[in-house]
Length: 87
Image (tube, rainbow, N blue to C red):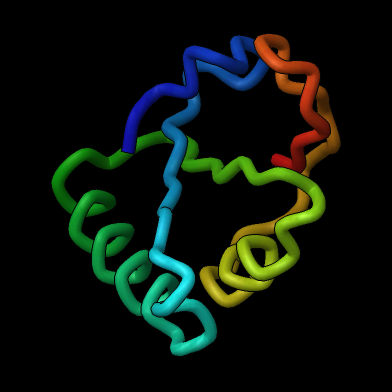
């Protein structure tokens, strides 16, 4: 987890994300790993707000966030590369 410096509109939130090899997709590994990290870091760091950001067309990441109990906040555009993002 880290501050999302590339998207200053949501700072001071802490961003949480994951990346998996395509061979590992669809097996629940992102959700399982994310839950473990969120539980550990929430106890250790106690962040005020944790967010996740994904490219809008990456629907699988959105599904992981729903499984984690996260809620949609907004659509935005990544300032560096003008990419549609979902927070």
